[in-house]
Length: 118
Image (cartoon, rainbow, N blue to C red; front, side):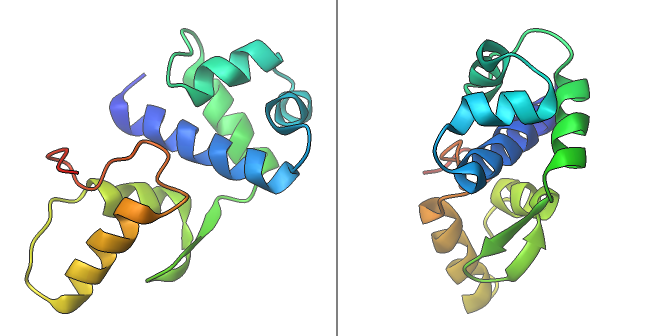
């Protein structure tokens, strides 16, 4: 699985687990038709097979939007893209977004930009 797909799967899983509340990974696994072990491995970025299919199933079952503290309600794909974008201090807005990404609960990889600065 490519890095962006893995990040997207981890982000979607994190959001889904948060939304389902008690039962977390096991409840999400049941809802998407995968084993709890598979979901646990995927959440850690270590799912070995069919990750694209799991991602597609996740996006079918769970809405793919998150609440960004800077941008408001956005597609989860944009969340991952913004997080991976290299930092450019061209504006105060870019600086606010970078700071928010680094502290955001949706940033499950801990990444702030494509260079990996933290």
